[in-house]
Image 1 (tube, rainbow, N blue to C red):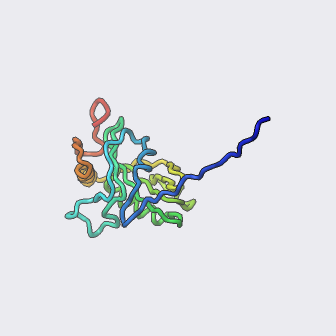
Image 2: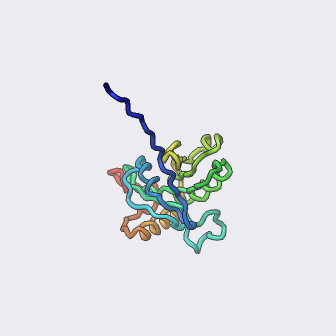
Image 3: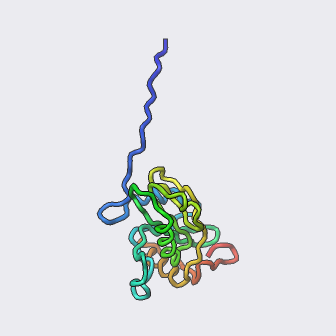
Length: 179
């Protein structure tokens, strides 16, 4: 006689992505963004813009997470704004962050525990669900200002302790495809 064993489902432990005013556990997000190529480096709390240009006019000065990927088209700078809270992210919040990150980044993701339905209809905003730890909507391609993009890539590489040859423009490629 065989005895049926009870099945036990273990729920994933809730992981915090915000602690002491800093983004934490960002590696759990980075693992899921491989669609942008090979991860070169990533860091938290990296300035999106140099202090001396437009810092007082910027909605967001420090990116929660900046990541640099190397793909077939060259380097791609991805910005991620993390909202680890119960309330869903609405379109006004997403649009504000898209405008700020879009000046420096080629791709932008909002990472949150929930999103209003209208956010899914927004162009270019990628959505990452923190609870499920997955991309629920891919990010569109943005056209950052070349000088701000180059400056952000240089600051990120410095924060990571990585040397990267940064092209003059985010759209610059070689005949082989990558910059």
